[in-house]
Length: 315
Length: 312
Image 1 (cartoon, chains in turn orange, purple):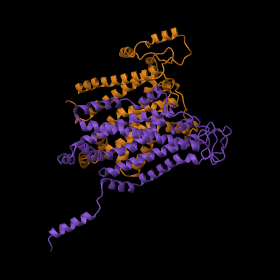
Image 2 (tube, helix red, strand yellow; image 1 turned 30 degrees about the vertical axis):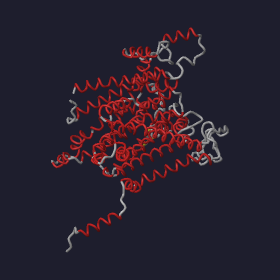
Image 3 (cartoon, helix red, strand yellow; image 1 turned 135 degrees about the vertical axis):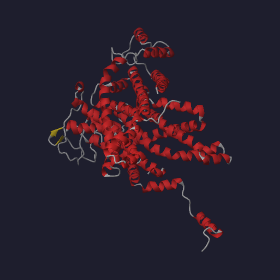
Image 4 (cartoon, one colour; image 1 turned 90 degrees about the horizontal axis):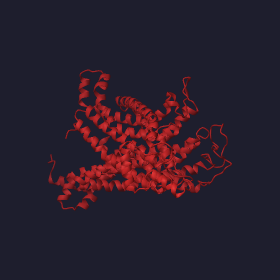
């Protein structure tokens, strides 16, 4: 188990290396340097600036300098946000993105599991059909359509239900106040809820038809007992391998959500950086995201082995 | 009582069997697909949308980039909410946008761009994915391992970020956008094709063909590719909406199609900015896009069921 984890961790290094190399050379391929657009600088000053950022050296040398700095966790200075390094910017946005991302995943897993299980238990009845059509809706309608619609409903028109005022702030972060988090988290979670509900229903239906569940039923166990103690354990397995893609989906979604709701997270820096051609920032965030996704895929595989004793990784 | 399997009877059955026209896998699949209501209706709707996108702008009175500053952000005449600031009048059936352009013609124009991106990007991913996957699967061994390892590496990058970076670096080039999206979408295609090829290589009918002296090229083209085609075509119908979505996502962030050209993503972005005062600007493009995505998904599901009936 540990040796497997270790091997996978070693395997992740070349992957990361390829990503870093790819992004570095793409950055250098970009037409025009980061300081080309500024006022006509005297050549001496321009030379000094380029020397300060190591841009005067040959590309291969720059590459190794970048790698060396990266090994120390230094992603370089931001080319456009003055006086900030990329690491500082990521560190500033990280807590915010993590907060909404983790909340969204937790929400998605809970709601998705519940919906999927209910749908499976009422297979081919109206609950099943409505949950599955809802899931189809959640998967097809992209975040950037869902977000404005929900904002319109709850933010602008302030829907009220049973005399309860459900109006929510349209945008802003307000230091992570709960009211400000509700809409972004729901928007982020919706597609994942849909996927998880579908996955859970599929595997649950399969598990409920399996022999050991029939045995449990024959023993006279209650339906709740069968579902919670026997079926859910097996049905949850496909969900574990979905963890990696789910996180990637949430990270992608956070680009839109942070932009729309004016939330100061990493996704917003990424989009701003992309629009401003702040190469170092964009590369830094990409490397960071790739690391997270790789690590979570690894975690998912390990978790899978823990949960499913049939999976043995020793070669 | 006659003998059940007399010589005559067998000959008779054989004769009749020859008269019956055989049905290929594809004939069967087509019949099952036609029986699938949702898929059929989806195909009809998609054809309508595509037709409207291609010929519609020629028949409409307005140009997609013509700005009329007397009717900025105006509702269509039939809009139910009387509290809107102004009505566009004329034949602006979808109202006008924030610089007074006709929204109907822009939505149809956006459909052109979005559908084109979907189709071209899918084509790119199809060409790269099938040739890459088939090569890896057919060659097998170390080459296969190396090639798929490369796919794994690319897989671990959240791909939309890669496209964003490509767009940043190459300055939002229109054609590059098509290719960039396609170049990222081929990964799954390559995996599917490679997996199929690997298992098909072991199948009896390929072995039989090989034993019969058929050469490798003919085996791939006559036996492997037609059998790979099923899963591939299902995935193609799912790649088109994924590409449309990817393009709209980029355009929504301001990194895709640039004004005055438009796509559904751009229109939805404009609509989202103005939704408090001009909700129609969000409503129409979003509805068109949602319907299109739905249709593609239904067709994909229908095709999968049609080609793989044991799954039902």
